[in-house]
Amino acid sequence: MIVSGGQATFDVDSIVFDKDGTLIDLDSTWFGITEAWISAVAVDSGEIEHLEQALGLDNQGFLVPGGVAATGTFREIEHATRHALAIDPSTVDDRLREAREIVARAIPNLPVHPIGDVRATMARLKANGLVLCVASSDDQATIVRHLDQLQIAEFVSALIGGDGPVTPKPHPASLWYLSDQVGIATERMLMVGDSFTDLGAARRAGAAGILAVAPRRHPSPIEELADGLIGSIQEILVTG
Image 1: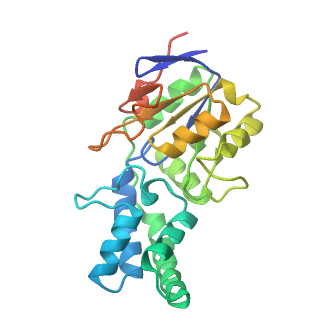
Image 2: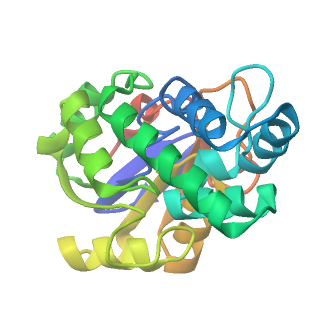
Image 3: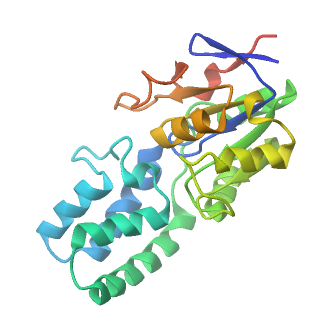
């Protein structure tokens, strides 16, 4: 069917959504938890500064678009943390263990603020016959929790997270996996996301196209490379 958004038009059967920065506000959900992670790992102001730069936190209360904290898996965040600290590995292990425990306790209570009327939009797209999927760098358990909080789980036919059975975005395996799950070729899938990981996965998997979502104060890092730019998924329309 014909889907339009951001002055671009696509002939697709399925839409694959990123989660953070696409369906929910990235900063209100993850900035605080990233600060807590850094506080648990760092022991002085120098380490805090190094980690903020390495993980991608600015001084305005935002995650830097394209930064590890904004787009990476937890494994990638841990790797960046180790590299930024450059201290004895056993010391890092102890600090990371504490940070993991803090984050694990905090995640179930994270605020989830949808970008626009996500539920009504997903219901409308589903009712028009589109197969909806989610591909996120977040862990799958958290994806499921957030879909439940947004009350959109019933509209999602398949999902894949950063801890799933395939290599996460920007590798194309996430889209290949979803393609197999729903029985729709990647060429008939539209990717909707906000980062280079989404762009890379879509292009490498041979998706029909990618719409960039840019609801934040920062300009979208991929708006010049995406096929269209939207402020929220509400702007996605079925036109034929």
